[in-house]
Amino acid sequence: MQREEFLQQLWLDYVHLHPDFGSLDFMPSLESAEYLVVVTLNYGPFCAEALLPTLRHFGYRSAGQFAMADRGVLITLLSPATPGPWLVLGELQPGTLTRGPRQQLEALVNQAQRCDTRGQNLLCRGRPWPMPDWATYQQLRRAHPLAAWLAALGPRLHHVGFDCDSLGHSLESLDQRLQQAGLIGSSDRQSGVFPISPLLNYRFYPACTRRLAFAEGDEHRIALGGIAMVQKCLSNNHERAAELLLPEHTRCEIA
Image (cartoon, rainbow, N blue to C red; front, side, top):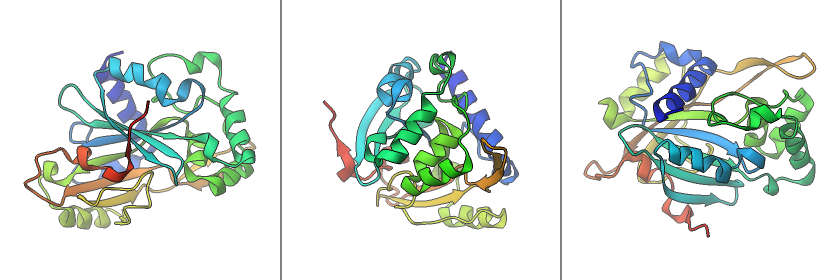
């Protein structure tokens, strides 16, 4: 697999989960994306350490690691070797969960078939373990929203970020167009997978909930991800928006 195929698989999986984005009049696309937020967990073959060699093979290089201890998440920011979206690899740390939810999540992951724990497409093949029942999902969600999200969806693309300047529009005008399409954004830069740097103006738009069938056959609507819009506060800043995405105080050095 080459980088272009990997990105296309990520994108196709994403638009399949979020068909409502196809109606947006500015037509967000993989080519116009500023960054892709992929969520996984620090367990077995799905941990960042195991995935990074493949991402390096695709031409990505680490541009920094960021720790959010209060969220139990470690972020690896990855820059592409050629023009294209950056990757933001968010890794949930199950060890930060209490014993019960951690064991529930690990029990699900341990049910993945061996053939589904190998290969270069672990981040774009969907959930490799059985769907949890609704009670388990709810318990995991109370423990940590990303634990429940991973249990139901598996390691994959969570949301896509777009730089308003690259799209040629202001954040305010795009916000109006998204609202007209039925997507209501939040400017709370603390409410997503990770906090957002004050160097960027930011809106996150949750996708419409989708009905999924859980293990015992009952169906429930859950939120699957969304879309983000960012715009640099200082127009003369020559760094990419993706480089400014994460708060500098969360940067860490991992030995």
